[in-house]
Length: 252
Image 1 (cartoon, rainbow, N blue to C red):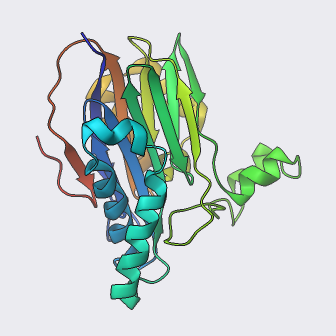
Image 2 (image 1 turned 90 degrees about the horizontal axis):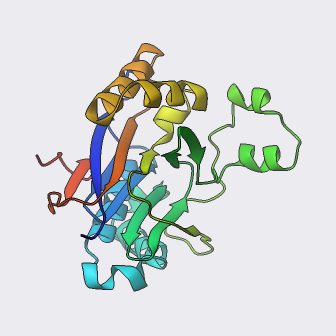
């Protein structure tokens, strides 16, 4: 039987925001997290646009259009801002996994993250598109200096309706039993990789998602947080697409 994602999800507005600019998509072959920005309603619109544009691709076309979807989303954002100038400057991150017969494709733009948990180890697959990550790569800052840096969330890439996007696209083997964590930076900006790993080793499924959100809230939850925990399984799962956060209420 073909492999599929069995996904557990959660989103929380946090303790210092009034609206949720995160959006997410859950389906058996495709999962994604988008974190909007832009103030007013802009962030919610941008992240929702990204998720719905991705979800609108027919399954038969997803393989060939997945890599280029960032350009499609950019065009949608550009068209929306031309109609409504109040949305000018809005943008979103996008981190998505597509399960194919040949493996798992990762598409990544921004600082929402993708991790894989396999053989007891949690490994970050995506690379943050941030100024801080560039300075880390250049050896100009240490990991300790980044933690409280005032510009730690300044992005170098995001979907904002303009040209020049260079998405990170990679292919990984799809192994039965592997588990993936997709999340907005509302999680990783509060909890360290070690703290996340400790929860992963102690909880599973929906209990893990709920525990991570609980821990974030216990530390002040300064931002929206959205989490997808996906297991690669070989059993039939519900084929219904679920829209989460700014993309719509979670459909049970």
